[in-house]
Image (cartoon, rainbow, N blue to C red; front, side):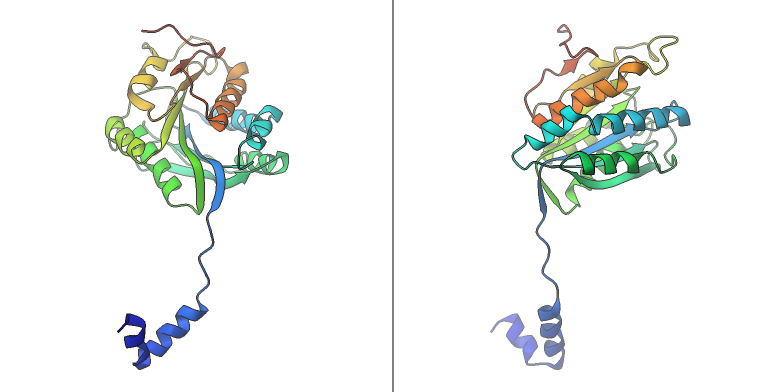
Length: 255
């Protein structure tokens, strides 16, 4: 005897079956070529002017005709993207929620939404927490992407709170998600690199992971948007890339 038949022989069963009949069918997941989480650095080394500068760079990149062409050339003709600013383990902010981008209009809407909210993320680096948040956003949406990518930007490869980068990366990659990186070497380009170590190498060694993972570097303010644009095109196209790219897009010498 089935569970439904047993329930039907009770007063509660009639209510259960009526609710079941009236319940709306679960909507099918939206299919896209790529689910892309953009994790942007909003830690203590980033002031409010730089937050706006970063957002503007991503807004310009997502609306670039070359990026729109890359999106339209995917098998699904659309991608889904969300923009998150991350700080410490207790401070991450979804600036723009999941948005399906399939052409100039939807790209412009995403770009416009990106410039509106105030800055809400602060604190010391929690890269591991940010990566796990990106995974949760991918796994708990109503979207099904042929590929799934987390893209994290930072001017440091160190983490001071939350789970370790190594454990978070292993968890994310084991879930079938690729982690790419944008190493921000210089913001105002007055004193050169903000750190004393090779940030690209640290990204390649400690942060990125999964099939085709790569690092793109931005080493000057005027070329930040171009670095983001090139990175987006590579992610959308999904073609294998060398792990490390200089700002010009050429592969760096092997270590």
